[in-house]
Length: 49
Image (cartoon, rainbow, N blue to C red; front, side):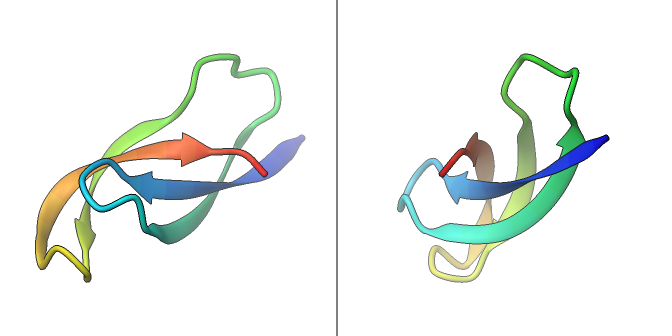
């Protein structure tokens, strides 16, 4: 089963992306994505509602 998570930019704290991950995965997801607000590639971390 998969759950939806929101990705938050580490630099500007904007919620830019929404993706899914496996439910059994316990650690938080971290990806390097493009932030439209910072206008550069930054680290994005999982944010749960």
